[in-house]
Length: 603
Image 1 (cartoon, helix red, strand yellow):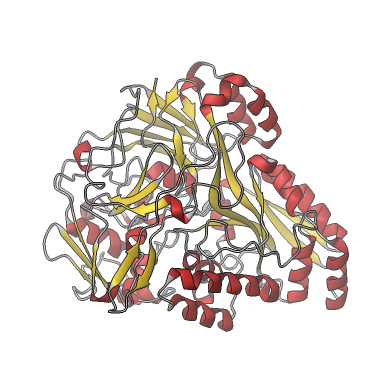
Image 2 (cartoon, rainbow, N blue to C red):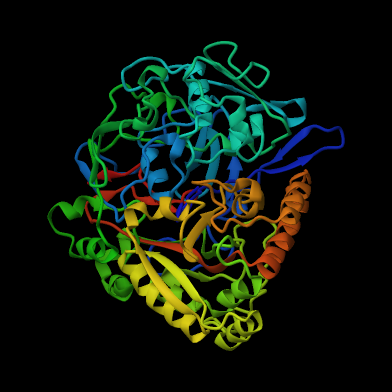
């Protein structure tokens, strides 16, 4: 959905529940649509009572997948939308995108095989985007066929073909494509990083995957032949990297600076780390697109705005800031009460539960003694960390690794965080003493944002109360995401965050804790390497019914938390957004946990 460090997807949430009928036929049970939660004002939703829950999602039909997108009431054409972002985008290349802020941005210039259609109540349907529908399965769910729509074009007016989609997928095998989701190449060619052996150089040396793996028999057809059945394929193909890339425009690593557009906007100017200008793509055809609009003339995105800065500007609502919003930056925690009390913000704000969980990862390569990791976990002041992030408008206290949005979630509390939200220094000290590690030095790393600097104070104090000596390591926020995803990083404890790519725990536990996922840029931030965990992941992944698998994922998650302690769950995220008074069409995108920019207009 988005990484929320993604704020890493999640990415994404979605929903078909997969099971196998008695005859071995694939069954996709689309959950009934639910009502929306959250919304304007300061309304708080309890766990599960939000737009990230599985019952809020369904699989759309071929008719749902047809364009144009439903008109936004009152929308006008023209004007420029100003976007104030705190962190610079780490990638523009759709193959590398996995964080919430860039997930939101890429919706404007990038299209994937399938995507998410959100209605005015926040209900979500998975629909065909480049494809005519959400795909057709055969061979017991191992084979999936997609057909491209008519009239699809790149920004230069050239047609989008199945060969372009093939190129987009095969380039994910190249060694430089490390930061995006890898479901499709792994399902095609092998788990972990072994899939890269099937096409070590990607398509760049003239080699391609055989048609028995990935077939494009004509310009309109893409056929995936997976190693195992995957009923959730329509959700995996909604990832930004399962789309079209024109071979002649593929500049490998430099594609990050100028991706070739298939959406309603294209890159006009990009100053890395400073700003991004998106302008109209005149070759985008709204008749092919069920999701996006092209109301504004363009989007002027600038980076480096701390939450306090952007919140002040939205509150003042002067000049160009009337036409401003943020995809993912939250209201500054210290200004929450002021925003809620200022009457004119009621119609231009929302508080919504996101599909993300904030963690404190513990580097098990460096902190090898599980008793020390347990001490860190019991010392961690969840409640105070949440308070520094904004309290109830920022999230809900987390008690285990899984979000309440997950199918099979149970409100377990192995660490007793509800009873002691400020941590348990006495228990932590006892564990340190038992390990013979009293006074042990811990390298605590944090991003140099205003919020994380405040968080660093309460975390440091809590660890010191527990008997640790803390060495604080401040890291530039613009490189933070890359720094903590390095296997050989020099940190012991650091914030991470994860959002399920759809509300099934197979998109959480394996990615965070399977040892076969350990690699630079991957999501096993703690580098947990436990073969028993890997074996249990394999066992649960073979359970064909998501309803049966859900409780098993919860059991494994709690076992990892109590026996391995590779990370401390801190809080379930909320997004508190505010925008300028001259911006219309703003709504919440439950899949990415961000503002949805696809229907935004200047009043």
